[in-house]
Image 1 (cartoon, helix red, strand yellow):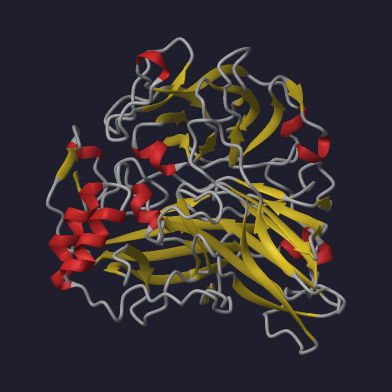
Image 2 (spheres, rainbow, N blue to C red):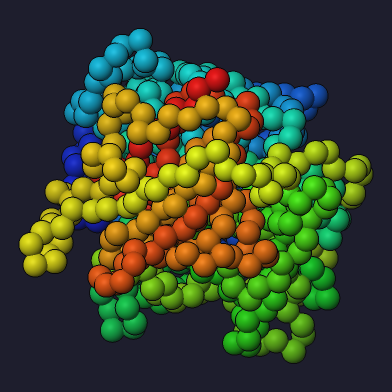
Length: 540
């Protein structure tokens, strides 16, 4: 047991989490919580839960354990042992989730709500607090819905979420994860993530109708092995549906495809900090990926015609939290090596290391696929959520920027003291405080253009809750039409130290039903946990 504790202390990102693990190790049910497959395993789909007659009722326990390498794991698990189930819903559904925090009590109170009336369930955040964020869904930020600022579910408590999926929610891939500020990164790196599928994409993208569908959730976790002569070490290992692909040998997960067929791949980067740039290579040649959806929105579907357009690329950049859905043809019989890889990332001189590495080995077979198939095209699509926003005149323009503390001479401060910020130009710079007033106040019905600069030496990953946005420009240059796709997560390039600050310009559409307080932040969660987040208020 001492060796497990020592390994945990040495490997976890934050030393404080090693202390927490020591406190609750005796109470863990190690065999039952968060089971994980061995490296080199076949990729298994996550368990599926489907809505029926307009409702989905799910009980989830938030549990933890320590694996054989001493890493602290977390997961959402049903009472029957289903880990991180995929929630399949229809537009207009009501989803009820009864979340029970089964972690032992935390020993450190990080903060207390300044206004007890604003607390949603509990007003004191501890090392083992929990909650859920339903990433990408355009749903209410009110208490018991997708509220993350004040929702704290502490040890032994049960909290009920009741989510109303909008009738015009774009069909596609979304996901859920913990969002307790200061401990979001270790919780997500521990694996407490799962997918949400809003059904019906085949009606907007008929090319996927009837295809076998493969759901892949890519996660990161603390590095298993130290530096090696076998290439640059990443900051984090990656897993594929929990199958680990550890440095330095990178034994890939295994996926089998039927020769002569196409599959519909739905890929989520549910990593806390790892940037991925996915590519599928057959004998070293990058294959065409026919993209049908990005961040839950069918590509090309928001121009008023209510039909999507396929976008063909040979690789797709997926910063943390981004999703891509695409059609992939199986390797032909002549192929000897077939892999899904992530390309090397140039994230800037201060960024994490994200080298090129394989993730999945694709094995060709003549056997029929056992994957579930997409539904057939059944109906004409309804009005789309954002279909006229690109042509509107914005009501307001804003400038925001990412910034980090630095020491004299360009030296980075110690990791435990470095602070990260996202600020509105002209306002005081401050780290995130859930008890602070909102940095931005707008109104329902507004359509705003935001320019977001990066004044740091590493890339950042802009995300806003509750709504999507339309990327218009990068570094002052208008994006080509095929790249102007509605997103909820987008990477901002890093600054080199000279010249203009890199930037993105995006259109925010506040004309939906969402009103209240919610957040925007960098979705590299180590940055968010250290302050790179702020509050926006949408008034009715």
